[in-house]
Length: 87
Image (cartoon, rainbow, N blue to C red; front, side):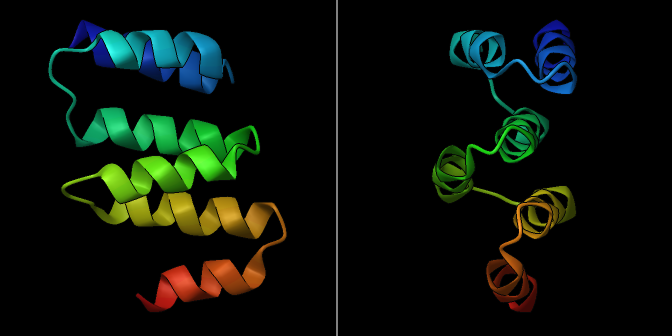
């Protein structure tokens, strides 16, 4: 979708403000939309927001789990990454 393309563009640019505008305006959010936001929040160090969105997701896939695990690992939270991995 066009919305997902915009969302991914802002996520890749590291712009959480504009990504949130697009995400909040989406009528239908698929798993790709949620994954883009989680990866972005982890990328810019907004782990609390990433966790909040992770917990709100009705369905998670391998990309979701990998985003959380790698985000924790890159930020130095190795035990949290390991805990996520074990789930």
